[in-house]
Amino acid sequence: MEQRRCSDCRCSTATSSTPPRDRWGQAPEGFDAATLYAYSLLQPDVAARVRTVFPILGSLAGLAAEATVCAQLLQTVARGDNLVLEDQIRNWAGELRHR
Image (cartoon, rainbow, N blue to C red):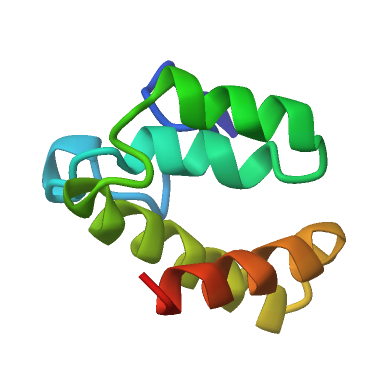
């Protein structure tokens, strides 16, 4: 495993199976903020602060980023990962559906 400095919250990558980051494509605007928000959901005060600091969250422009991160995390939950976040992610998904 190689530790890389990058803009997302999950920077540990396996160099043998992960393509170079410049080939990953572009994420929607606000993707990093949405990722930070998702991983802060267990701490409601921190999650609220993230939404305040990153006004892209909650905006029409940031909706694609929030939906993308939420969908990705729901997939990890289905595989048995991030189970501690499952309820918060499902609640977030419900909120996103009503926007």
